[in-house]
Length: 154
Image (cartoon, rainbow, N blue to C red; front, side, top):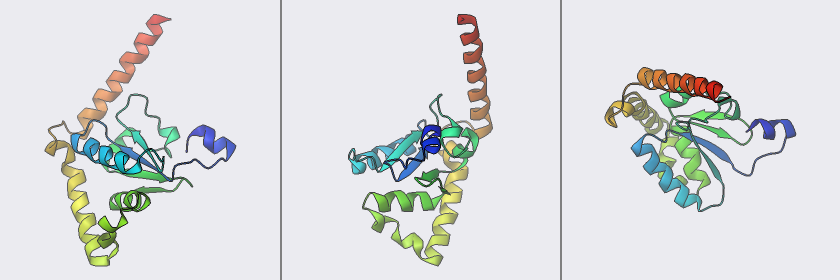
C-alpha cells in the first residue's frame, strides 16, 4: 500500500502489487502478458523497481536490492509474498490459476521453488546484465548525481 493508503486505511482497488524489474527483457515480456490478461481491470498493480522513482516506503519497505534478488508481491492487506508464490497468486487472480496449480503439490512445488532459485541466481547473467552489486552501485551513483544536480539547479 502507498503511504496515503496506509494512513487513510482505505483498501486499494488492486488485489496484488507485483514488483518487477523493468530492465529485464524476460520480466517485461511476462509483465506485458499479464497486463493484457488484466485488461485494464486493475487487479494487479505493476510496479517497476528499475524506475528511478521506485520508493520502498510505498512497497512494504522492500528496497531495490532485495526486490532485484527475487520476485516480490504485496497483497492489498500488506502481506509480502515472494518466489513461485507470486506467480501462483497473480495467475490465480487473473483467472489463469491452472497454469501454476501443480506448484501447490508438495513435490512439484519443491521442484518449482528449486528451479526458481536457480533462475533468480542466474537471471541477470542470462539476460546479459551485470551482477547485482554492479547494478546497485550504479543506481546509487545515479541517485547521488541526480541529488547533486538538483542542488545546483536551486
